Length: 322
Image (tube, rainbow, N blue to C red; front, top):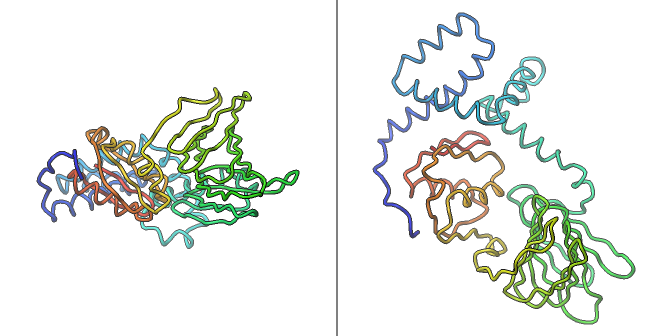
């Protein structure tokens, strides 16, 4: 790693354990106090004064609770748990963690119309290799939806969401047509990647040429080493990115070079099947350089916490950085 500040001395292990325990208990109290009895209130006051770290943990937990969508889902989940889900949710130690799992499920089903159109799906953190008629090879990245069919003698590949890497052979086969949001591409004898997220498509060409068409019948030819974005307003500016970094996911890696921590965490969230919440604003602009395995996002978070002397609180489906 380079361009990172010198780590500050870390707290002793017993102190770290005590703070982690206090935050764990504080999250429980936030739920319990939603419908607190007088006995609950008295017990909470006793807990608050029992140890100096408890008050600090409660303030921290309350900030998380009030600033995240987990609050409403967790309360609803706790109410349902009392009525009918007690047995099925007993595996989760914390209602907050169970709420996170519920919300992750809602996000997955929230794009149900897209996923119903797909022939192939990947879950968060998964990659999948496909072979198309005509010899093209496709690697789907995390949380992607993909479909393909034959139209007028030509194969059409549709990236409905997510990211895919195409290796298209040359020869006498008709050109492969690739669609992703506003983008249409005609390709043969080329290797390139397409990312379609939040209504915008990005194309990166590693080998060969790609003929692109946008929404307004704009056309452009992208060559090896170039990238471009396509959105509702048409094409952006042609770029020459570092393909070693941008396409490292093909080899199962995430590579960052002097990248702000905020961007690093945003990328890790694509591969972690849960919530990553950063409560240390000092980390946002900290530059990160490193090479990590994309199938081990939690290990990457632990490494980042170590080099920045940040604290990492791990719960089922929730990781909090302080």
